[in-house]
Image (tube, rainbow over all chains, first blue to last red; front, top):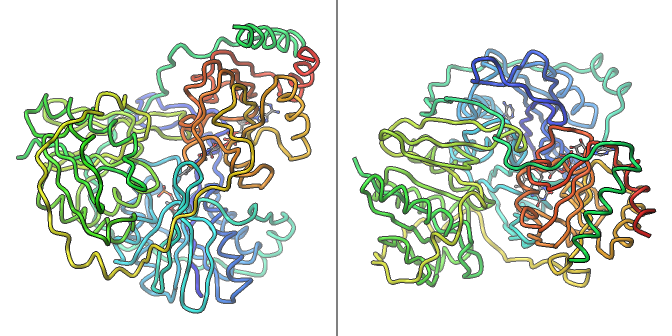
Length: 253
Length: 319
Ligand SMILES: Cc1cc2nc3c(=O)[nH]c(=O)nc-3n(C[C@H](O)[C@H](O)[C@H](O)COP(=O)(O)OP(=O)(O)OC[C@H]3O[C@@H](n4cnc5c(N)ncnc54)[C@H](O)[C@@H]3O)c2cc1C
Ligand SMILES: Nc1ncnc2c1ncn2[C@@H]1O[C@H](COP(=O)(O)O)[C@@H](O)[C@H]1O
């Protein structure tokens, strides 16, 4: 089967996020971007299926900082083809990106689209579900354990408490991947460099997508801290002592 | 323009999910302010509506094809329900099921959607939604345009008690469209979690470990701390995805909800999906080198010292 994986670059959440002076967006100049972790899982699951059943894996990214690197990394891991969508505003809402990805898919042969289940940086819905709805094909979010048997794709959808639902589908489908069956593989930098010399990224201009998302962002802010934690300072020894004390008090009481 | 608020009920195995009551409680507040009715849409088969008394009206789409959640069937039905009811605002849970419904409703009915809703208000006739983004580090306030809009709501945002009301609201039966039975996507069964491991929901003391522990080589140290505390090791999702610990140890949205007396969070950032599962612990102590980690907003005590320095010292103090 031919699998397409749209990938997204998102700000690294381990770093401090600052808000611009107008309070309308993050201060983006100093942000570092990395691939959304759920996209990494989608790539891994797609490669696992390809390795077991043949077919191809194509990755698609929207042009921005780090997109080339992420696409080449996916190629280095074993993807067959990479496409970069150009001429699309970096801040385009997900509905607009979904339309652009639809346009790219229209010229391709594919069986499964695997997106990451969600990304932490947008507010207008998850691309996978939007894509499935625009394309008129089924979509399932929070997916793991995808398997293929002939023409049939089977998968799990996760609910709370470790309960899962099983589904089967024998048509094109969009899956929002939560977790691959194994930890996403790693591509050594040397391998990525080599791939950059050997392979090329295909570029496709985004057609004008006339989608009004119908919402405007008024304000971005860091959540008001409630009581917050009482922060314990000092040497590791002192800190351990204080933590032991509060725990012992709680255990005793 | 209709001022009605429509809440999409979520249920699994016949049990209504708490987030439904949360949305009903909030929906009631909004509906009474705007003078609209609170409508609850139930898409299922044989779901007992008697706990949905908070709603003024129930739109009951009862069909065997809707007995188990099917993103294709349910989104088709929801689209037609919303077309007919034409509510001012549709509230959908931002859960595994709701994710498949909200965004597809937005496309099918061409309605604006704001996801990850922590709050929703109607101010001067405008629907305002606050989303929780960037792993809980940032909030974004949006204004939704148009007569009918969708907000998907994060579980745990509103008190469920406000919407849990017995009663006998008017039940209007809605015919399911024929499409319900001939979906391409087929539900083939539910898988219940394996039992056998410790039940972390029954533990008084949990040591929650996250990606900050770096490697499974460090798990024995965390086990040792748990032992010193008389507790058990639990984990965030990446630890379980890495197969370092079984799924039965996962705390959070797609794991288990725990309410221990003591929860020690080690190298856990406090993403909303994790917080959902442990925020009601009586005492939360967090160790995380990132001072801006959201876990510190929920913890009672915290430190930004390296966990590998604090944990050994703590084990020593406790043994
Ligand atoms: C639909 C859905 C459902 C989900 N369900 C769940 C769920 O049930 N449970 C869950 O946990 N997650 C769930 N997630 C994932 C969630 O979004 C986060 O990705 C996850 O909780 C992050 O885990 P973490 O805190 O361990 O890792 P990270 O966010 O990577 O945080 C690691 C932290 O460790 C700190 N750290 C690193 N080194 C050290 C050190 N030496 N000392 C101290 N601190 C250190 C870092 O500062 C960082 O804050 C779900 C996601 C989705 C989309
Ligand atoms: N701009 C984008 N380019 C490519 N893929 C995207 C983009 N935005 C979202 N996606 C895909 O959709 C998933 C969920 O992201 P989101 O829709 O932002 O919640 C990501 O993991 C990607 O697989």
